[in-house]
Image (tube, rainbow, N blue to C red; front, top):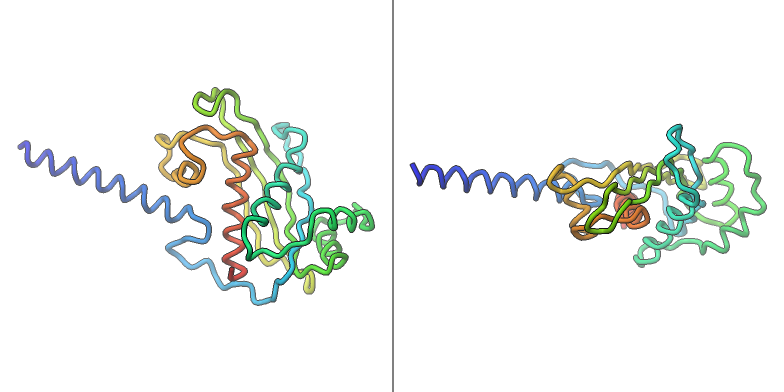
Length: 213
């Protein structure tokens, strides 16, 4: 009986680690057991980033300055990889002074792209930004962030890609599919800024694969 019991334990452990491994692979940017579709066929040699805008939620769970944090994290992730060629943020700021803040967001993003001679523009909105309460190893309440990113072709005006990050950090023991968070950020509770960074890395990883990087 003890041999059978030991065998069952080993099988259970192997199954658990298999779930963890598959969860990690599926969670990686650009990794999937299924096809994500073709890459973008248009040449995208230069990309602009339009500052992220607020999408006020009914719950009021959006701290002031959240849009600036998401925008800064996008630039931070782009600057770390040589594949990305993007318009400097100061150039974008100057160009936006000549673009009216009225009209639909995609149209304004395209106008920005034309003004700075970019091939594509990343833009989006943030609707939730809740800061962690407590320390990184003893949080009373975890960070939570929700934002959406889009990528528009300047030449055609078509939205070629979109992605969303809508997460509240949870302990790994409650959800094995959160393994990617701890793999990338370590076994601790993140600040909202750190959590945003993980989300941006995840989404831009998907966009990079779509662009063929």
